[in-house]
Image (tube, rainbow, N blue to C red; front, top):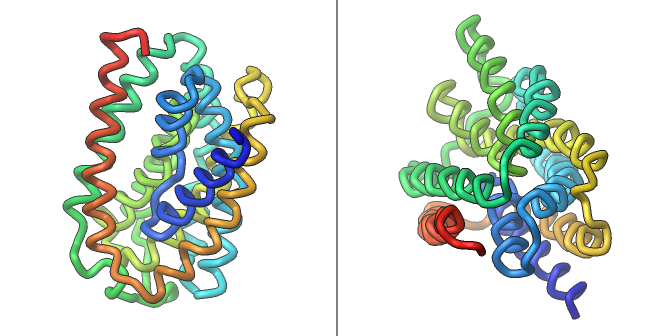
Length: 257
């Protein structure tokens, strides 16, 4: 029964998150902590395993739709590895409650970003080949790369959202292309962040496998649905839900759960 619930959770979360360009960890980590009673460190490890397979699956789907800017995606990956490794080992220095509180802060920040998104998301289409990188843009991509890797390694999620914010708000890239590029960039970030968590024993396979299988399937459904659906309303709903979850996670700083 638990395996079925995990499978359905992965399927639903990956479908919605790949649809709007978010990382599944922003939902999976609090669900595993609050719903299944796992330690935050274990929830992060499972989240990273799931997202590694999910982002590869979603990247393939978006690549078929020609919605991935590979140059930007590669730049956003350059410093992911050192950032992710540093972030992962920070988890060994902090308690589960502190990590959960930090994750709650991240969720609230992400939710505000989602709610403020342009209403024309998904309609503003710019070809991948039409985006030029200046020296300033390249430097910003490299800085974003380290920060997103650090966040993904420390909290198990959020790296792709940081990439999305940088691409859309700083670089001025179309959200339609940024979504696919973010999935491509997260693939390496999540892989780099996952490796140290495996050695730290944070990946519980009996729970990670069913949720990952469901997520891989969902990551194919999201991009397909996004071609026929306006994302603005769904982003606002996600933002509202994330605020509630973020507040609940912040509450763990003052409670035992």
